Image (cartoon, rainbow, N blue to C red):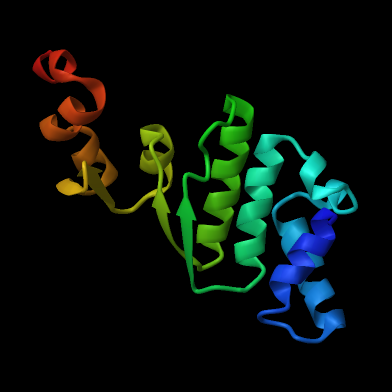
Length: 149
């Protein structure tokens, strides 16, 4: 399927009429800056664009709450920055986002509140600044030596 076809398929859950689903898909594709690849086969996209396409599929349902899991995993710096830009735009459009992400810089740059888990146990919760400075978070994610320094 092309990028457009993939997003149309996702749009059908919210817009059963083909014409409405296609209009919605085109709007979402433009919103996320993928208009130039709308006719490209999804499987031929590089990883960064495939990750963005996953987000597009969810966004095409016009959710109030968007759940993202590792939306930036495996991306190079340029792709990561672009995904962060899109996530910010989605957030600014009024959609609430819950994201699981291991890139702390990403989380800190896009979040109002952060909950940090270590082996399934909550070790910190608060603003990005509070969490980033928490000794338990530093120890869990950067190591014992860094936490002592």
